Image (cartoon, rainbow, N blue to C red; front, side, top):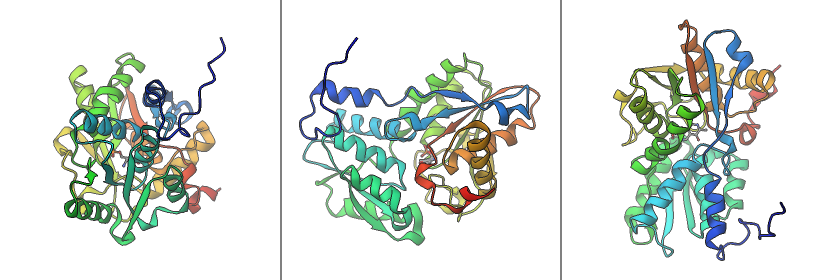
Length: 319
Ligand code: PMP
């Protein structure tokens, strides 16, 4: 059947009919769950699966919470057309806000560490977001401090979802990521492994999985030090701890070395055909670490984004 000749969604800023708006929004979530057959073979009969979050329209897992925080802001009346959406982000949430802002006609202002690199800066600017560059030596915490300062000086101008302290962040995963994993594994998941940034993915998905499967093991992972270069992840002992994070949710926390995450990125590209970002490499390195101690089980982890944005990192060139 031929499709009606609709105008492209993202180029009709300011004049998006309601049905168009819903089309882009409906593309968020329902991502594939891929079995890592070759990497998993070394721990058989344990199986390792990765949720391919780059299938989201903004290219990462963060489309889910960004959309939910916007919908929550609209529903509670805190986000109206005259407000500017302001938040701190090291990348993917910013891309998600910027994309959704363009599609849903909201102005977006993002505090980002100055060292996010030219590619990510270009992506954000291309969607029309306004950027406030923050001290690179302070990382995502510097961006958080700046967003708080801007909001405090002029609270009436902004809608500040504050992804680190907003329940609509983890609830997005409770409502979507968790149920999708349960369905895609036919309820056979035994271990869930996820990295901590805002912690929304781990907290929300973990809560949902635990409710359905009380025996499921929930394993969080973090970079093993403060200067890790694993985009999107936090080393909690040296960071501003997100308000939505509760370490008691995890049955176990493991520490992943940057070197191991990068090596796993190369293995995923060369052995599985998956060009994923460093946090996804870290996730699979962590999942493999867990798998080695098991006799059987079904491990699910999250592949938060693709590697494209990070190709300027030297390690991709290694043999
Ligand atoms: N990996 C990447 C690439 C991310 O952008 C993020 C989000 N900061 C995470 C992992 C961590 O996700 P969460 O914020 O839900 O903990």
